[in-house]
Image (cartoon, rainbow, N blue to C red; front, side, top):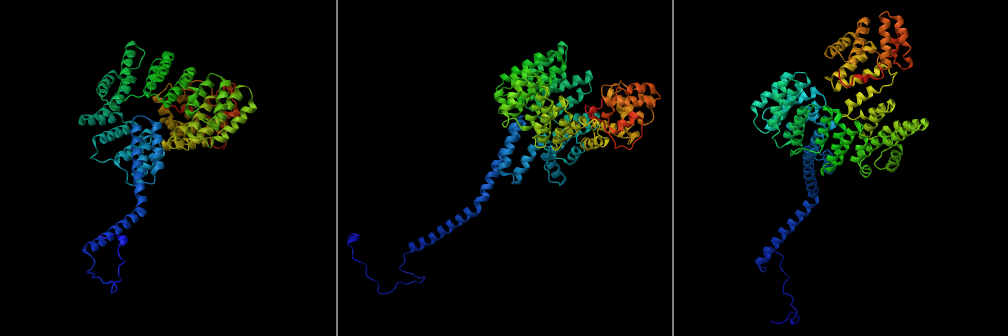
Length: 613
């Protein structure tokens, strides 16, 4: 066969090639190949089109699936009590694919479980629209009950249908029992738990045992306590969270100063420490219980708490900061400095706050000043910078600089993050800075979850000469959030009596509270005001507990003396009252004048914030 290069050139055909569909001279395999080429070409074009128009949805779906997995991890972290990790994972899932409805729903669910009240409100909206799943309905009910919103909790309980899984059915029972407890139907609540426990022999029954034990312990009788301990010991064998909860309650129920009680508490505490579901936070709980039972043990318990948390590898900085806050409340400032280092304070705002709080408690102003200047612009926000600068200036006697720093503190408070505002509110209250505390609590009132406590904080820090309309507005808002709250009811009654509104009903409510706790000085004073407003000043004097240290109470006592005809005693008492520090209605009572001044509160409408006791 000749080499191609040596082959002669092809001759031109005699006729032009045929372009008809019947090319007999084209081999069959070539026709087949042309057909396959067409198919391949069409397939390539189809894939190219799919790549252009389908890549985006596929990418979105991949992101959504990844975000769903991260949100699920956040739920698991929450179950373990790792709140910082929960927050981090929920933020990550949200940023990744929050436009996806499935991701948004799961993030909202776990955020609500973690206590975010805006997310709880979203679940409530879904419930109203009839779109809430059983899980969402349960979480809405549970968190509403925890926040004191009993009507919302009842709405969720009513929406739960039959056919729930065993775990959800148990949660539904606990919700219904909790609602009954909140409404004062304690016996009914107990019966609901007992009936459910008789039907439930599964693992979720341990949650019912713990709840029923708590109800029995509240009865404060030896027989009920014995039954409660039996239930708790049964539940304590559970290797999950239910077992740890049972041991926590067992520890609390055994606390006491008697040798046997101490022994029982220590035994239960050791069981809790070795339980699989126990956390480092349980060390703080055990310290609280021990000191509450026997305050003389504070030095020993405090030192042991620091040692245990320092020795635990899984004791997070957040846990140690929580422990430090408890230690600060007990003036254990040096233990705080041992628990949270200066290096940690430079990278963690909470650690910095407790360390500064401890240094402030030790009155080590040189070190405090050095730390705030070192960390300004880093972990120390402007709010706390001006707070501590004001404190240092005032302690050193530089009143002008202190007032200027307080002015700047109030100015930057508007933009403060909630944890910083809360720290400032509590610190300012501790040192008696009412205007600054009031400003901080007002910032906190913007957060739905913090609002009840923020309203109480505002009541505690109202100006001495504030009119009653301010107190009435705040107590009305608090009652809208917590209608069953006795302290809110009593505060509202006090302000109405002070303002001369609904006096008969308010005086009757004050008497009702007094009959339940006749030894409470605050209740006796409010009831005395009720008797004064309803023309029974002599009866008001009969229950008066003493003058008290507060200017407003001295003014009220003067009014009672005057209305009882004891003018000479009233004139003598009046010399101790600073009239310029009274609200308009207090001035009216004090002077005996009838005025048309705006309705008043007193500066400290919060005297009843601890409850009607």
